[in-house]
Length: 431
Image (cartoon, rainbow, N blue to C red; front, side, top):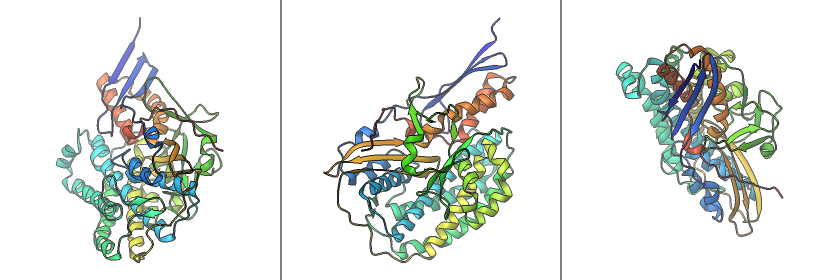
């Protein structure tokens, strides 16, 4: 007699984009787990073909409303690689500051409105705020500080417009940035206190060893420069990415799924991987916080990703304060360049993990080929793999409980489903 159970979540909640979960159980055996992404694919790689390179940052920013800076920054870094552009130290420092703003606002949104409610059985951040009004209000105020950085440096908080190939359209003045210092100081103290609150959450137990991959830089917590690091192989140059990683189409997803070439097992990107691989590069107060609330053993519990996000918020706030304190208004907004044919690639760390871009440019300064590999599409296989590992401890629960608990696990990755849905197969050939 068959003991088959089918558990379906038709629409995942409190995630960005549209996806579903399909589980098939036979008694105590997990027969099938599918993270079904059905977000309509948006063919950004095709939309970029024939466009001037100056249009690319504004187009790629539209891929996501939560992490537009990551797409902009990856695109300009790749185009600058193709054009052999080296930006000034001042431009580089402001780009990191802009990236800090995005990490702060994105992580705070996830922690306080999307993920934290799961630890208290709440259906929404609004419901959670009734239990913890001060913490949620403070968390959203921290997020607002990140948005303020985006507005000043990017021109606006959503889909910033100030980034360009070679630098910025306009450099901010010191007078524009220094008023943020008092609020940043408040936010840093508040974030450390909030991290202690989050560390006291009732964490489910789910320790799972897997390959962790993140950017690594010896001198700084890697955001938009460095090499690709892993817990299972030596570091790689960014231009080796396509030699070691590939994307494949699966029938149940409009997002391509990534694997390491020659390896069937998936890998994990995102805050847990970054903190595990780059702990020594955290800011001083963030490092102390990591040692206190997120020791190395904790990074194997997927639900601890909320702790890693709090640590990164603290690191970004501390770095932002230091960057603004030493900033003097720069006169050179961008580095002039000569358009030429070529190809270039780059990777940065979006809030959700490593994001890879590769472009080919023709003699007219237009894009002739593009490839974009979002972090959520790379995490898909690991999410499915982790669900398989998590389900055995839930097998005796009701179908509704299993669905709810699996949805909570999915939310810990903060999947950005809209970003991931690019099922156009793209071949970029190096000359």
